[in-house]
Amino acid sequence: MNLASFSFFRPRLLDALQGYNRTRFVQDVGAGVTVGVVALPLAMAFAIASGLKPEAGLFTAIMAGFLISALGGSRVQIGGPAGAFIVIVYGILERYGLANLIIATVMSGMMLFAMGVMRLGSLIRFIPVAVVIGFTNGIAVLIMVSQVKDFLGLSVTAMPADFFGILRTLASHLDTLNLQALALACGCLGLLVVWQFVMPKLSQQHAHAKKISVVPGSVLVLVLASLASQALNLNVETIASRFGSIPNTLPAFEWPTFSWETAKFLLIPATTLALLGSIESLLCARIADQMMADSPYGDRHDANQELMAQGIANMVTPFFGGMPATGTIARTVTNVKNGGNSPIAGMVHALTLLVVMLVAAPLAANVPLAALSAILMFVAWNMGEWRQFVHLRQYRMPYRATLLAVFLLTVVVDLTVAVEVGLIAACLTFIYRISNLTRAEPVSAQDQPALAGLGDDVQAHRFYGALFFGAVKLVEAVEENLPARAVVLDLKNLIYIDSSGVDALLSLARACHKKQRRLVLCGLAHQPLDIAQRSGLVGEASHAEMAADLTQGIALATT
Image 1 (cartoon, helix red, strand yellow):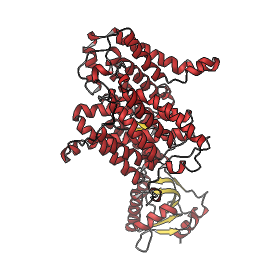
Image 2: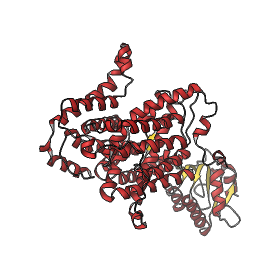
Image 3: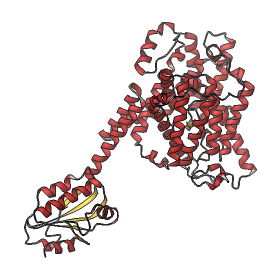
Image 4: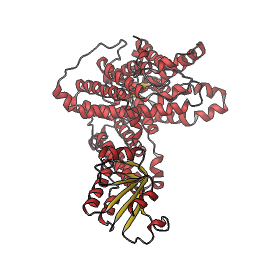
């Protein structure tokens, strides 16, 4: 049976290969090789910052990168280790150990795959922007703080995972400051800044600068830092001095010790990995869609297929020495800008990393950790949306409170708590605003002449908006002030009624029946009519009468 026959599982690769030609293949190969070169230092840096060996990042970028491109729902998204995972992975390692990190990652992969199978990809878009910006900026701060140790060259045996613990440890070891490491890190960071902000301008003015600017800044920093460290015999820590040599062979399959008791403790960390991975990946895919909008090969990504591919990658990679993986914005943007137009580019990127690891792994052992810390500092700064803090005064208080609360809780407490609080705050804000948009207006005799002369014997009200649990007070107010003869409710402008809303209408109908007042409901249609019929509000046993519109309702109430 062909894979394409499964409608719920159809990798975008199958569609991208239709009409595929040599020209597009050459573009994909060029983009894939470029992305592979860019991914090399980032993969090692993310792994080291997470408390793992550098090869863990390489294995993840190779295996997860290939699987996500081959099986994913986007043409151009590049998968691999991401900076957003650093804080979470470090915390899991610190608390549970490496074997349990493997289990947590596999569990998160199962969750991601299940989310894709259940078609939950679109739900990720309901996470408010304030929550996304808050935890993104919070993660960026934590990444920068975690890199201070290597940036300053401090001699610290073990770093805690919590924010204040990191600050206390750094403060207590400032006397071990390594000026050579600091100078090297500052030079690397300065070169990265120049490469990103100055070189684009110079490349427009000088042909030589344009040729040089093709080299990724992170790769240039690694090469120059390694050469400077050896040429000047600097007393700085390198990958080899801390981790030993990087293997130039593929990892072997490793099955961790597993128990259900362990799985219960890992449920929350695994859920955090799954949620963060899904958010990061689908946000990245949306950015890729926007960049490819004008391309003849551009189309919208399949969010559910992307989640399933992420799930498979995270279920497979950990057993081969990998770490959690997701879609990565920087590498995806690099892929699009260099002509990548199909998943082939992402697969080439993974194969490029494999070749580099097999051939040049010994050279990476000389990379100074101070240089990697500078790269991660720069990555963290770029991933944060710092201008949002400046523009906060333009937004209302609920938005500001949500963003700042998520940001501070991410930094000080925990990412899971931050997202939970942010979602609760956003939901409460949404409920409050929607309840304010729902309103009930009394109908006057000027609007409906049939009400003239009836006084308070007959009341009519028009309802607007959504009658849900946050707006049932409007129906309760009618029930508390019943007229002498009849109540007419015009519900044609209601777009939605939930179970609480229909329960409030049923309560009003019972109160009217008990006090011998007539209740006439007018204009029910679509979803409000459907739930009214299913709840018994409409029907032979109902205490309410029905009318097509307000005019007929008033006529029925006054007969």
